[in-house]
Figure 1 (cartoon, rainbow, N blue to C red):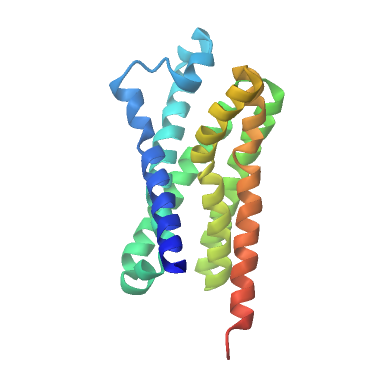
Figure 2 (cartoon, rainbow, N blue to C red; figure 1 turned 45 degrees about the vertical axis):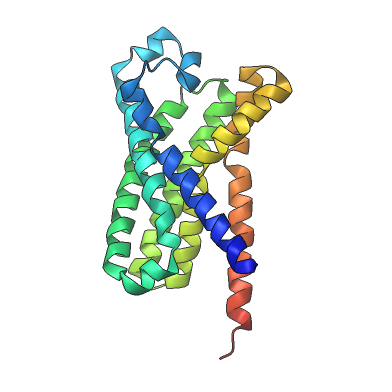
Length: 211
């Protein structure tokens, strides 16, 4: 029963990561004035720098989300360590570009200063945990690397949780702006809390293992 439950969780985790990771493709095949962009002014949508940052953020963020979840596969790490390392390097590069672009577009976040701070902080946490994960593995600290990667991907996964929370909050509040002000924080802070408890559980497992 536990095995079936764990497999179901893994499939759901992977499926959501893949679906939202591919989501940016929609901006290239249909009119982009939908979803979150429908709340942007025409001046912002016509701003060249903002557009470069926006597409850099969603495309590379999509790549990070699309490939990052595979890094938690123990089978991949055991049998295909070179693939694991290659995916890790691509993930880090994607995070660096997407995160920096994210900081820029966060300054134009819908909802004003509250979401400017919220989305800026999420990008900074994403960048810093990813860099710390890289530094840890370079120093040979495998467990520390794994923990920072859990934190990193929990923020990356906010692209998924945002799209789960936002329609629910719109339904509850009856207003997009009110919902978006909440989701600017709700999309990533609880993810970090969940990541903390996952790491705590992993540490407990390591302590109880026989020497």
